[in-house]
Structure formats: structure tokens, C-alpha cells
Length: 54
Image (cartoon, rainbow, N blue to C red; front, side):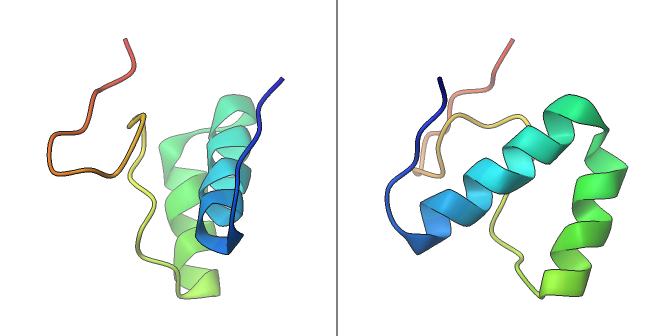
């Protein structure tokens, strides 16, 4: 189960799920179409010290 709270978190979650089934390039294309620059591929969170998913 994957959950998210709030609008921005839900957008990040949606992009993460897209990335699970495709690739980072597809996510970047979607971000450009949405004009949503905040999602960073393969990051657990967007804090000042993000943890990378291994």
C-alpha cells in the first residue's frame, strides 16, 4: 500500500507510481506537461537531506 497526504504529496505519489511502471524519462515528460517541477526521481522525501531509495 502506498499513501500520500495533501495535494503536492499526491502528485509526487502519482509520479512515483508512474516511474514504478515506466522510467524516469516518462516522469520528466509528465512533469513538463503538468508544469510540476518538484518531484525528484528515486527520493524518499524532499527534505534538505533526502534519502535515496536503493
